[in-house]
Length: 308
Image (cartoon, rainbow, N blue to C red; front, side, top):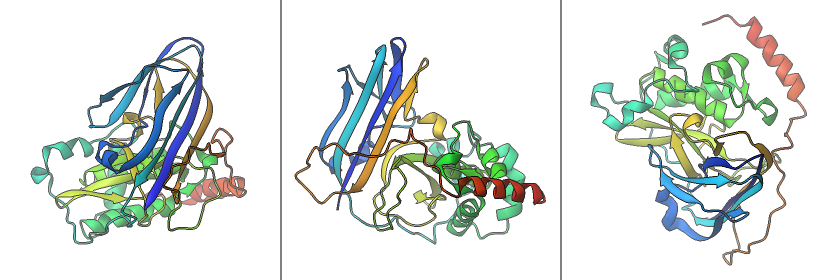
């Protein structure tokens, strides 16, 4: 299977501004890239690649005063298989975990394990450890939160998402990560591409997706509290403790986002036609027709619920 991925992101700065991006595909997929164009900056700039503390490939640059557009377009080979299932994968006690997993047990910027620990043990302490427990956490998060781009807020933490009962994919991922860590299961935040492959097409604008990976047995396993099903065609961009570690773009100074388009879909044209895609920009918020009603109902339900 071939998957087309890419983005067009534009910002405006009032003065030259240092900037980093986490938009490159993970290095493990380099051999799968059949053809690509970019990343390209307009106006033309030096794009310097570097590896961060988590092994991600990032880019640093100096954004000029005025407008800057970053674009990327590629076709990637994929096995076309759903996320693997390993129901016998067991939890590993902390004393036996690989050292590199320990960083994914602690609280982080968006994942407050101290605030959620008692809740997690009340909810999942009686669940069979391992795969079943992680899936139960994802089931809970999926049912607890209501998704809509209208609910997006960049400062929302896992505990706040739990109380507000709303969010976008990063909020689902942060809450699932935090609850797993509360149960002493290493969990990390993943950002990447995931199109509507093998599922009904979603009419909402395409965006980067967030999901989680947990360490069970002897490896990391993919879970997705937002969609809560095994999906085809995930292409990882970066991994970190939470979204604060891997911001798509980060400027060391003020900027205005003027365009944000993302695409990912199954590609049937191996010739890689470099056409521009007329994708809806996420700068125009995608509010569900039910958003206001859902928001009100969620607030009323949260106020009526007893605290665990």
